[in-house]
Image 1 (tube, rainbow, N blue to C red):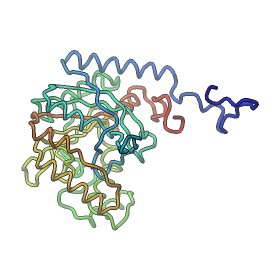
Image 2: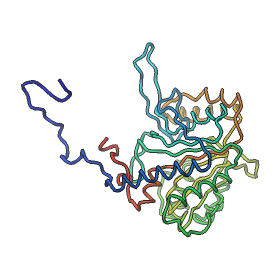
Image 3: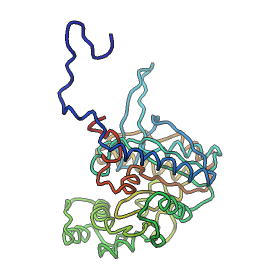
Image 4: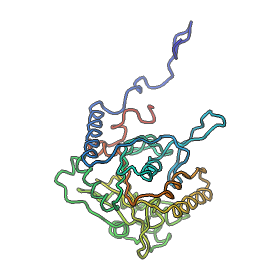
Length: 338
């Protein structure tokens, strides 16, 4: 008896819109999406970068306070909890430590609580790593990839590289390395952006970046925002400036954040310290506990190449290439139709 059949009864379908079985993206858009995938494969093949595959389910999860992971429990003996990966980063770094050389991957990633015009909890991520490069060299390759895939960049001026501090001074009139939380709160209100007076200054910076600074970036060209505050380092190296900055960048086109890259942290002791700090902060804020990646620490201890890496939101890239207003226009079945 096949699923859905009942002897002696007619099958009764669940109540929903009779048309919601259809994809939300037009078939022509899905064809254009497939063409972009082919273009990516040619781009990396021409540069000798190896395509790899890594697990979607992993024993560890991202500890970042701003990422929420899904988990599932395997019915093994004993049962095991595994985590849907928020990016392939942790596993790809283990490949780099094993001597893979330059690698790239196009894969599914999962983040809870992310749904909207540019977000879907299940999405497609492009990620690649370049041993022997720093983040500035990788910015140049990101620009080349964007020029190869986005029609609006044909004939555009060279990419703008804008330091995080300069971006805030120019577009929000504040110094993100000096101004205190009260000043950020006052300036946000003056700019028409509302938040909670109780927020720590880091939350105000996130809000001002998203609402005030980012929409002004990448207009008519690619903008790379770089030299983030040390508190925003995530898995990037720190440079001993005054104050210290993270060797991290984000790429923007037409006010849309497309990519997040690092000159990758290679020190296992610093990585372990950051994991511990993240976990303590998650506990303090009442966020779900997640396991840090002990295998990554072992890989870094074994030896990790000096390299730069970047993650790029492929669905957003397709949106920009097609001029789509919503992610639903470029993926077949968003979460509401999954």
